[in-house]
Length: 180
Image 1 (tube, helix red, strand yellow):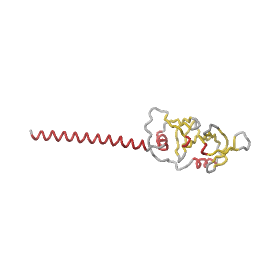
Image 2 (cartoon, rainbow, N blue to C red):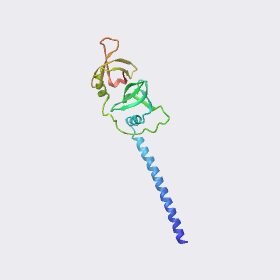
Image 3 (cartoon, rainbow, N blue to C red):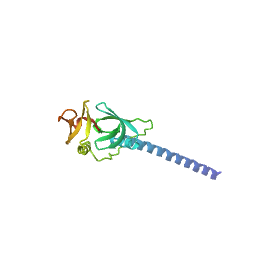
Image 4 (cartoon, rainbow, N blue to C red):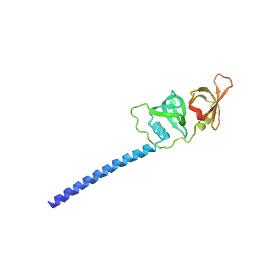
């Protein structure tokens, strides 16, 4: 009987150890998930949503809702394709981002922007094309015209239908830019 008692105690000890290991593993997973959530950034969430290829709605300080697919995340902006047009949104103008599908998984990462580019650099790339832009500013104004110049903190448009008149818009006031 002594051998059976020892065997039973050993079996119970193994059950207890395995239970402790499982409990510790669950606690560790919860702790890691909490750490990830606490370190989450807007850029990290945007990167996750870009990779999920799920439609999103981005709301801006100007009250505009941009619906489409996130296609790029830069150092200070993101790019969405909405109705076959690119929309560039400064991160500082984003008020919320949400998936439009029910299957959204958690997007609590602190990953860096995959595009090592700023909004200014993206606009400079569009200068050669003399791209047509529709610029929404935080105060609600909408300006449309041909991209004329990009400075360190300024975008200049030659306004549609106004001859050679230009609008100079500080990049800090930009809520979104639609590239036509």
